[in-house]
Each structure stands twice: as structure tokens, then as C-alpha cells.
Length: 140
Image (cartoon, rainbow, N blue to C red; front, side, top):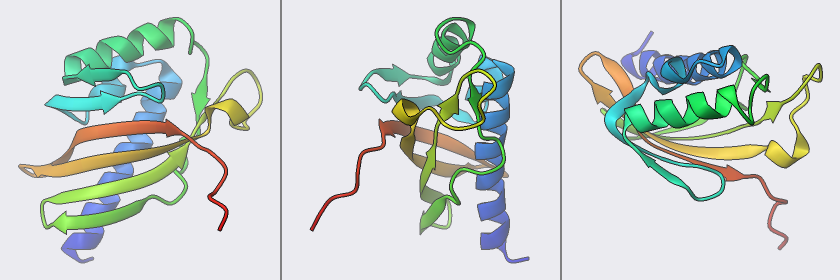
């Protein structure tokens, strides 16, 4: 397996682990892959700066309004991974959450995310994350 393929697999594993942490209601697990000084922009334009803040905000959400929500932990819409350098990538992925017994994403919570990841020693870490609600495609 080439180094690039290994890197792509590691980045996909980060997305999978984030979804699993979401499903467990685990703010620390969700934030684990972020750099200490990472930025996170939520779907509604709120900015969280730093892994600890990202962790704390998500734990508050998991304990409150997003309690019991589930994220698809099998894939993130086959993320598009674009290498900027050997040590930095931009990832575009889709996702969403569901509530209750339904496994289908709540149509009001479908998102497209943009992530910047950087190699940090032997691992990859998230430097930035932006979550935007999905809209209908542009019409030409």
C-alpha cells in the first residue's frame, strides 16, 4: 500500500471515529483528532476555537439538544480527499444525524463538511472543520 493510500485510510478512520464518538455521546472522543488550536465552525456560523472548547460544546450538545442522535458511522459519503502537500489535505464530506429509531438522516440536518487536516508526527490531526447545511444544487 502506498503512503498516500495509508494517509487516506487514516483520514477516513478519523471520520469514522468521530461518528462513533458522536453516537456514544462522547465529546472528548469526538474532539480527540483536533489540534489543540483547531477551529470549528458550526452549521449556524458559531466559531469554537481550540480542542477543549470543541469538546466542551459537543458534550453539552450530546447531553442536551442532540442527546440520542446518531450519525452514520459506516461512511461519510465517500469523502473527497485532496492533498495540498504531503502533510496537508482538504477533505469534503457529507453527513447528517438522525433521531429515534430511524436510521435516515433528518432532512433538516444533512450537512456538507470541509476539513483541513495536517500531519502531526506520525498521525493526522484536524486543523479546521466547517459544517454547512446542505442545499439544493445550483441550477445552470
